[in-house]
Structures are given as structure tokens and as C-alpha cells.
Image (tube, one colour):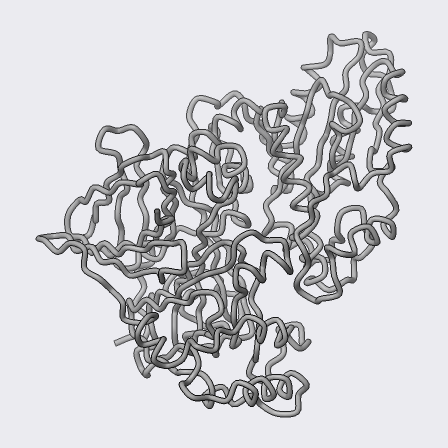
Length: 590
């Protein structure tokens, strides 16, 4: 029997059709420019804002601006046309970096969540000067840059959006941070500035201007496909009231395996695949289809614009406009161990990094290498010497020794469909030979690596290790007895009847996420209980998520696909289409 048996039906580009806006979509920059010109052709004065989320290719936006305001006058009713690059008013790069030093920090990976606003990136005197110039001008004034509404209230507001994952890919290709010259900076540095500073400012700005957008542009695309603001907002509202999937992305890693390449038929050209993110709304995009045109927008737009409908009242009350549940895959089948690691306690992540909740998580074992016994590393062995372990970690960080992980850390056998709980402060990692569905809270970069098995990254550089952060968070009482008592083999049957078995599989009482597994051979009705739900089809070829009263369009999901059920759905039915299925559903517990 083959080591891998694939269903071959994983959809790596799911699309949600938004009906009724076929005439509100523009297939590229030429059509968009024509639409804007048509809107202003009878005006003797208009301010057109081409507003950019950091990471959008500004040179292409300027090229579009020239289609709207060429140097020659093309309409006798328009006295003049002029383009203003508002980013000429930005504070110098060195000044911005100095003012943000406390948020950037000297750490390779971690910064502090920035509380500043977009206006803090600009020189007040220069802004006022441009505002004054705009007020005096006649004709068509086209503003280009990040934060155009700081300079003038636009008559036509065009917003260029982009997903965080696409921004990261551009960092890797050499793109600097916003209005910076750090082209050759390490990707980790660029990502840190994006995650802790730029994206925070940009999302705050975007959130207050959603209803102002006259057009929204897919900044992920090469040719700036766009929709009207009306259609865009309608799409977000619809997404927040129906089950949907996001655009997954896959990435190789030093410990990556082969399961996803073989089972899901993706990433065949990569050396391996370590991660799949198709349940991380902060970084994933959604594909919305208007007429015949598919556009990609950040899933964060749904969270920011429709938080109550998406999250539920009680979840929104607890987390604000932040999506609190994260699903991703960690593939070590044919690969190696993950780094030995620990996540920060709540008070530590609040005090050190400005994040208000921490990265509690769990490992759901989706599959294993069937030719061997497989393990996860979890908790500390009873009776170890704390000071000796700390000394060995510090020596290993310096390269003096190879850290003897199995001397200190429990090695727990795991099998397919086991669910291992990992509350923050617990030392852990997946061993080789496991395909893990990681279910966690969303502050997804706060991993303190303790030991990385003498490896370097794919870039040939030592991977960042954070022993001191880790030692400040390790819960030393989470020993072998604790692990056996509280973190493994905790499944609890809630219902067992013909065609339907419901089991509680997690999480730990210190963690906010509740997880249930539905093993079904017939349609089953499920209530959201005022919480957004994230799910995955962990076994079975296919299932349909539908409404009993046709209040939302059905969604077909395939093996290993993650999906989101907005709280506003209220109640839904999952129906296996091929005999039987296992579905894992995660929500925020009361």
C-alpha cells in the first residue's frame, strides 16, 4: 500500500461569487482609468485619491495616475490636471525609524505593537503646505500615496488593497518597507516592521475609511482589477453571513515534509512544504467573483468591516475586531522535528510586546508516517534539574553543545486523530513523521525557539533562538504527570447515536478555544452559539455545509480544507457526500 493515498480534490483557489454587481467590476487599470475619467469629465474641479496600503506597487499606481491626469489637456472643459505624490511629505526614513525604535527593538524577530497613527509618519509642516496647495488648485488633482485623506477630502476615493502574505512575498523579492531604502535588509526585519508598525497603522486608517471608498483595487493582481466601493462592501457583508474558504498558501521550511505535496497535490516544484496557511485571516486572502472577474482582498477586511456579524457579539466583545482562531498545517512527514519551543504567558506577551492575548495552541494529528512510530515533544520530564536544563540551553545557543532534548522533554507517542493540548508556557514541538493541524489563538509569531537541532534556515543563516524569553515563560511544573493528566488523551464523548458521534477533543481549561469532532454518516445540524467557527474536514472525501432554510448559499469542502462559519449564520447543516466524514470545529468557549 502506498505511503500516501490522496483524495486529489483539494481546492487551492476557492472562489466566492458575489451576485448582482456584474457591471461594478473593472478588469484592469485601463478600464478603471476609463471609469474614473468618465466620472470626472463634467467637473471643473475634483480631487481623485489613489490611496495605497503599504506594499502595493506605487510605480504602477503612478502609471495609472498618468492615465487620469496626463501632461496634456485632453478635455477642454478641464482647465488642468495634476498629480501630487503625497509621500513627498513623509518624515525622513531615519526620523521615522528613530521615533519607532521602541517598537522595532533590537531583536531579530520580535517588536512591540505600535500605537501610533498614520499622521505620525508625515511631517506636519509639509502636510499643511500640500493641503494649502490643493485648496488653491483648479481642475483635476490626483493624489497618490499612503493616507491620501490626511491631505484632502477626496471627491473620488480609490483604495489599493493587498494581503499580508503577498506583502511578505514582495519583501522576499527585495521590496523595502514603506517609503524606506532597506531593500537588502533581512526579510525578518522587514516583516517585523510590517507586523508591529506599518500594518497596525494602515489597518486603523483603513477601518475608518471603508465607507468612503468609491473603488477598491486588488493590489495583489498585476493589472489592478477593481470594483466599486458599493460592490466591495456588499461582498464583505455577504461573506460575513455565509460559510467561506480563503486562499491557502504554502511555504517550504528547513523541517518541511512531503505529505502536502503528495496528498493535496500542491507545491510540487518546492523542495518540501513545511507550512500551509488556509485558516489565518490576518494573512490569507479571499477570492471574490463579480461577474466574470475574480479579485483578491485581505480577509482582515471582513473582520474589520463586519466584526459583529463575523465573530459574534460575545467574541467581538472579548477580542474586538480581531479574528481569534488560527488553523494551519505543519508537515514533518519526510521532514524533521520542529524547533523545540514555548509560547509566552498572557502577562508576558502583554508586558513585553503589547499584545493583549497569547498564543495558546494544540496539535491535531491529521496523519502520521505509517511506517514508523511517531511522537511529539511535550512538557518536561519529572524530576529534571531546572538550572541544569537552563545552562544546557544557553550553551547550545552559543554552539558549545547539542542540546540533549530527550534528557529533559517528554517524547509522547501520537497516532492519527490524536489531539494534544499545548497551553502557553508548555515546552513542545512536533517530531518528524507527523502531519499536524495546528489550532491556536491568533498572535501567531510569538514562538520562543529554545533549540533547533543544530540547523540553519533555508537562507543558510542560523535560525533565531530565544532562550531567555523561553526561560522566562517555561512552566516547570508541567512535567510528565501533568502532561498525562491534563494534555493528552482527553477526548470526551458528548453524543453517540446512529450516524453521528460528537466528541470534545479540546482545549485545555486555560485556553479560550473549544474544539469538537463530528464523525458523521448523515446530515447533522449545528448551532454557532454566538461564536465564529473555524473548521476542517479531517477525514472523508467531501462534505456540504448548507442552510436548512436556504438563508445562505451552500459551501462544499474537501479533505483537509479549512473553512469559516460566521457567527451570524446561527445554525447550519454539515452533510457528508461520500458516505462518512470527520469534521473538526473550533469556536470560542463561553
